[in-house]
Amino acid sequence: MSARKLFGTNGIRGLVNVELTPEMAIKVGSSIGTFFGKEKKLLVGYDARTSGPMFAKAVIAGLTATGCNVFFAGMAPTPSLQFAVKNHKMDGGVIITASHNPPEYNGIKVIWSDGIETSHEQEVEIENIYFDNKIVFAAWDKLGAKRELAGINDEYIQAIKKHVNKTKIANAHFHVVVDAANSVGGLTAPPLLRELGCKITSINANIDGTFPGRMPEPRPESLGDLASTVKAIKADMGVAFDGDADRSIFVDGNGVIYWGDKTFAIIIKQYLLKNPGAKIVTPVSSSTLIKDTVEAYKGELIWTKVGSVTVSQKMKEVGANLGGEENGGVFYGPHQAVRDGAMTTVLLLNIMAETGQSLSQLVAEQPQYFIEKAKIECPDDKKEILLQKITEQVKGENVSTIDGVKIWFSDASAILIRPSGTEPVFRLYAEAKNQEKALKLVEGYSSRLKKILETI
Image (cartoon, rainbow, N blue to C red; front, top):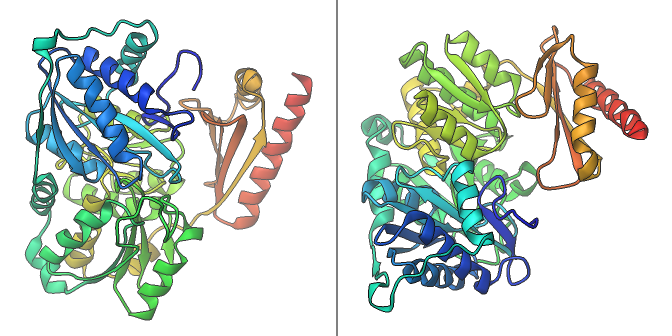
């Protein structure tokens, strides 16, 4: 964390008791409380991390010290807590989670009254209170109260069920394998799917903040157990959640793991068939498959910078009801304009039930792209000038400069080149109709960037 920065692309994150300490969490809590104001009602909850209860207590101490009234929901998925903020008409909320980071990390997310994470502008306000010591404490007799708020996970489950055809899903008798990463996805997804008439097999189901089954980021290389389980028991589908269950990655009945673009494209197609001309919001890191699908089904595509907060805020701004990211985050506005792993799972099952097609059949209908990724080292102080120079070089091409530079070519291939927000590197993300072309793009632009770096 830099001198004047607390928030990253997705809340405040840090190594437990190294970068993020209880002392700091109390001050962050007091800064958030000052930002919201005295007597405001704020919801607090946490994911399965071992340090969750400790940081929740610290943040609650900071909030009540500024006169805010805290409703404590305990352990829950991030989307469940976000739904509760909106459903219980809270003024906001604080979620203790480091999402997909390893177990030695934790973090703090701030939620606005609509259940959406606070905007980057609001985050700056909280940072200014924190760094300029503008915290306003309440008098001894005006301290905030803390109350328990039970039952939010069940309210969330019931809310999701309203958005799908329950009878059709129940009649399909789906068998789903749920990999909850030993975290909070296991509190809501299995009961939700059972209530919809699905048969459930769970792996990594017990809550354990050390994440013994797999790390909390659902990446293809860590989902071998899920894929082999689905195949072995002939299940219809497998789903893997991240640490706070706002993202989901899917496995088909043959044990094939799909990156988030493919399942998001299935949802886009069905959504646009029912809502012609609708707006779809996605970051520039998304595959050309998303662009193809939105164009094919006559939707309006709105690109954003990378980051779930940006997608949610853009959906709010333009009145869009569907957004998504390539990492498995889908934002379904009729439920809530935030990433929601359980909602995404149920949307896919609903499509399978309505079309009578398996997940592999739905994916097989899509145009196929091959993806190659790379990164090159670049000192933080040279990032801006490198980006300027590569942008100048590709000026005549079909480019977007929303976040880094993305170039689309006439043969349907594309490459995104952007400075990392968290590491001293530039990331390259290429895709093409064949592997060779994708590889060529990554290699060609990597060497171009290195050559430019030599001159800076």
